[in-house]
Length: 320
Length: 309
Image (cartoon, rainbow over all chains, first blue to last red; front, side, top):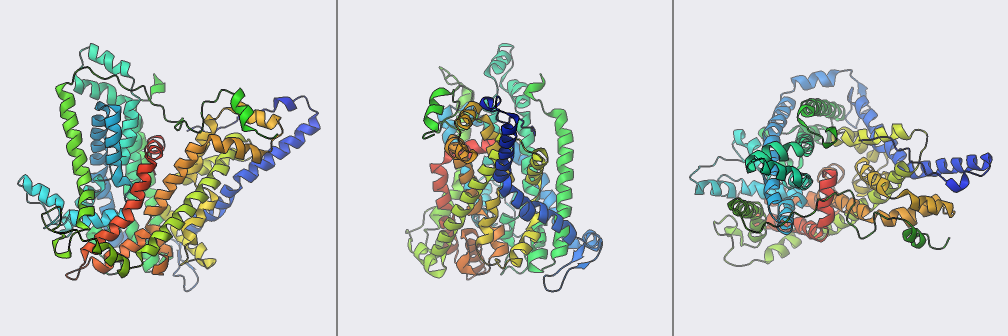
């Protein structure tokens, strides 16, 4: 991503004007620029930068909204390390991410490859169909999959029974709840599919044709031409899906938590759900802020590792 | 200067016009049709059809089950013994879901409009001006894009509480008045693809910066602005977190928050009335599906250029 943008409008007609006039114009330009950018400056103060600093400060305090905040040093962070529920939530979140990311990206890649083999018109229709779940509200997805994954009457286990498999109790067996969440998340794989399909359309046909002339079969062309050519998009997808998974909240919260489900099953406890409970149900604002920073550090660390590993495999067209 | 656009459009080589698709999407020429179908193509065609059915089946089941009589909801049969439209009238009378639809529309349109206008202004500043501090601010824009929403959630809640606006709908959209890093990034990239000559011509003709923005940049960037609006409308329509954090009064709920309340009330134990929960789910889902089908070009092309959200 390029961060420089030195394309200031050159006012060629004004260049002959006296220096003084140019200075006035430059000042006007600058004033206009700050006016245009001013909403963002206010937002930076009130909605992003300010809250980031506030969150960091809060994470070293004990604050319950009722009495004023007490500075407690690193106590919150020390408590998190010994908090069984926080550790469970982190473990569930990491398990969900580790199971979901590879399967989702491979499934999306498979769908995108199939789409790329169809004619443009057919692919357009299927692309729409695969993308539909991605415009469905996550709460509705949670409701739907509570039933779809139901051990006795759910569609998933009925489909498994057709091929002779006795499916697990996805929504009640603690060992199967996170895998159930993974199955549910795969339904929304359309977003990644659309990204990878767009990348596939950009693969130069000459390369594939040259490979075919050289005797490469369909598999070899995919493996040694197509995949390297879209490795940038694949890498991007892995990172975006990972970051999304580490922050997942809505579907699992809808299915297993809420007012009447008495705390919910801890085998479905994801990190952001726990953060939400601490902050907005128990009003432990300081503790919730510390949890948020732990999450941020985990996301940053995982993304950094992925970026380092990814840079070895990603082939950028410009490098040639 | 009476009409800025007409002469500008006539004299410059415009790569983008209002009717063109987003120019950021580079599409290769359509693949040449093969004269005969290979076995591989038949197999992949069948695989696509089967997968499409697998993907659509849960959606179809949701709609059909929402029309079944209560005891048949979990039957093997896909279609019930009779079509119970009364499930929908029942849910309308059991919970204020009509009000939630209206709330969702109001909040969604306000959020989308606010973010589109403010992000366009900010993006224009980054794309067309040079000013002290620009580099630092741009790095901050990129930085806030990477920050998890959970980090700012607690302090933002405290701010809205301090100004007495918790348990109103204001926090659900008003933050969008100050631009959003993701859309600023998207629109800035778009503004930069617009030909510079048009802007320079307008300036030479004496148009103010505001006028140049409104009469030239906005019309030319229209596809990107529509994309921004539609993406944010979806984000707002489907969001549960903010309504969950900020709203207590059920009359103020948006659809996702309302649907969660319906699930908590009617999706529990032996007294469950799943047909009502399913009808409410369909009501929460269908409007966005319709918007998607109408604006699917913006959606899918936006996703392929920006990576979704």
